[in-house]
Length: 281
Ligand SMILES: Cc1cc2nc3c(=O)[nH]c(=O)nc-3n(C[C@H](O)[C@H](O)[C@H](O)COP(=O)(O)OP(=O)(O)OC[C@H]3O[C@@H](n4cnc5c(N)ncnc54)[C@H](O)[C@@H]3O)c2cc1C
Image (cartoon, rainbow, N blue to C red):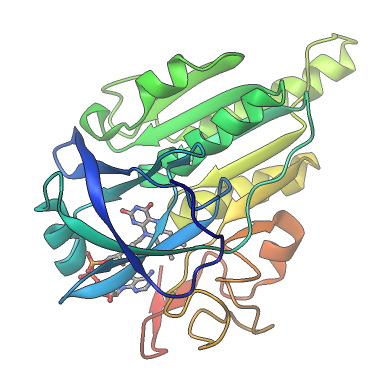
């Protein structure tokens, strides 16, 4: 089933399957395509409860997936749903990651950011891109999408955990730093090793800021997904406008290039809630 893009009103769909990824993370599959591209988000409506933004974890023209953490009221209610239950979806909204065929992409994923990064990897692999996926989490129980990344053609997977329970002990950004620094060394020594053309990142904002700084320092193109409190999803309410430019993250984002992110005064510092109140990150 395929429906028109950019739907502004929710349509309810039955959950076709539920996959438990980790203790607090699940993936819902719906037998519908919304024509979403990697990095775009949809508004997920739980009738009688609330509506929240979620990144599209996959849209392959036949099915759509979301992967979510049960962190608060709505996501905990969502997590209690079963196959066959109804959920309202509208979208897709916002900007998406962009690449050119045959580029080498380094994808940095933290938390549920692994889901949209996997969607980007899947689509970029179809364009013969080579991919270095760097997935990070607090500990190995929280790592997401490792099997999925491992099964993708042209993809190398690196893992980092804060406590060292799997992969590199430390942050995923440490691995990116090594890769970008190695590139510089290789270039100096005349090595023909393939450089990273672009870095994509999705995850906690402190991680995004570290990726942004690193890419700026190494002059590597980078695209980041900035999450703000989304309400309408299509630029009308202004709730997701960022200081000081007033750019609306639901239409001008969530995926922004590094130069744009670095112009956003609040990037890496604070965000606003539904009432516009500032919260430090
Ligand atoms: C572009 C984007 C993509 C996202 N993708 C994912 C994803 O793929 N997986 C995932 O697990 N989480 C994702 N989130 C975060 C997710 O939207 C929040 O975790 C969720 O809104 C929290 O709702 P809650 O009721 O469970 O939690 P609570 O913390 O209890 O939130 C209370 C209420 O605040 C509101 N709220 C909180 N955060 C937001 C927000 N950012 N925008 C609008 N309303 C909000 C909702 O009304 C929510 O019910 C994304 C957020 C954005 C902006």
